[in-house]
Image (cartoon, rainbow, N blue to C red; front, side, top):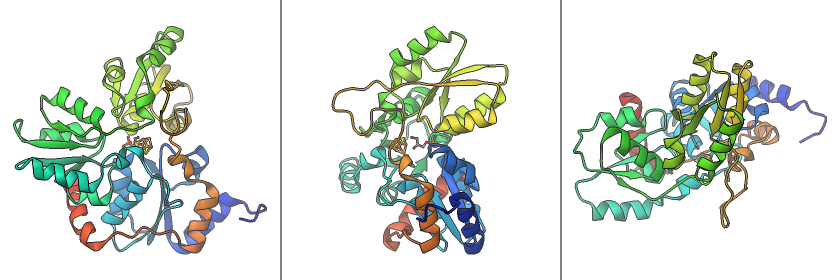
Length: 315
Ligand code: 13P
Ligand code: SF4
């Protein structure tokens, strides 16, 4: 990319020229959130992808989010600035393993977190996000036989608040699993009045000490709705602080530092290196060259879209 280009202006110009919109997750860097047409959590991004009139979508997030956009809008072009922006949680459930597990558990329905590949969604009865998981699960009879995956922590939380006994896949997010109660307690000592917020992908002890638990949007909306609360301790990927600080300038947000254990995957920080693969340069290039695009095997797409549509109806 030519160093003299004003990338933000060029991206907006290309969006107009190509009838494209930029969708960005809260975990992308601030500069991307600032130029995006729409910033949201995975539920809001899926809704937006299903609704847009634009011909082209640039999904700045991770690969499964771009796949969700394509599944919901198969006739649109979905551009993904970096196809290698994966997700450790989606990677923790392989479609072949899930197929085998299903075969070993006849009569069970499969509920999958949205952080899954299209191939896993094709084996799924209904998809959930952190923003609607409890609501969607409440629509199932209490004694329904359910396999939930891949996020163990989210599944465990749903079991605990809905009184269900779902079989849980043993997957997790390498960023959220690094938050610890100790990290929160240390911040709480320095800021005793702060409200503790945690994403549902965090481990049970972290969720147990959190005042507000939910998706990225749940935490953001809580802070926006409570201007009287001046301080927040935030246990999720640090990118969300950009929108929190932008929309709540009189409140202060403290990111929880991760507990770094030996052998932990990826970076030793509270950032998702996959989300951070999105850059302004890559957005400019993907718009300019119309590449890389998301393509999904039609045989998989046909089955993978159904549980997402069911989720959107139920929530
Ligand atoms: P949200 O649905 O809260 O945006 O979460 C997506 C995600 O990947 C969290 O790690
Ligand atoms: Fe996946 Fe975790 Fe990154 Fe979210 S934060 S996209 S769950 S690796």
